[in-house]
Image (cartoon, rainbow, N blue to C red; front, side, top):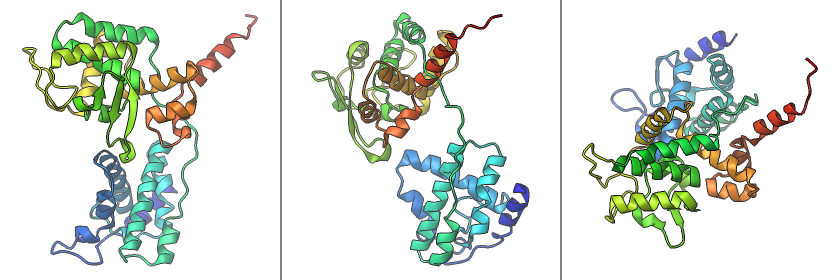
Length: 326
């Protein structure tokens, strides 16, 4: 059934219509997908472009992408088939819902640009999110894993080891996203108050977090090795040990943690798992969820709650209370 609906969708895009350039495509200032993507911040734009490309591929039978699909020609019978098609391909509800959110936004811009009639727009955008509950992604690291991870970095006396120990301490101690860590500058940190300013985070919001305890000690040692030049806090380190004061990429953070995790003989984990651990451990220690929400930079408490892994630990401990007569 889903395959039949996808086939129907693919029939609507044999050619583009509307104000076009010499290549037959809508000009960017009339392209609803391009206009929508231009309203997003770079980090969000990359993820949404992937989602819109996925929808365009399904809607066109693999013939179009996000910037070539004539979104204004989509009607309810087409958009209603997208969620089942995405689910049929094995995408998780969160991914499906992100794609549907992007779809609604592009349709909105198509209407604002005068490419769709109001009634067609309202009907086409009326698609429901997926509500299937799945097991939470990722994992929280145990305390002994964090100790092993930092110890592995400390045992390497090089500038790289010092930097990586500070990086792990900061990711766990503040719950920052890796996209936030790579944008940190020396001017953002005030060691006298422990305050670290996160500028232009997700949603374009600024916030303050606090670097305390071991994380502050590790960061101080790294900054002494880095030097006091203006620019990025976390920098590349040459094989010779020389620190180059320039910004790193979020992918480089992933590679560093993967390398240190293998050296410490840990089960695979992601940079975001350190963020999950930060949230879970704070809640487990009795911190108010609203405060944790602000520290994590979440728009709502509901999002913060999804990161909490205490529920699985509590269920496991509750099961231990049972005595099975075997």
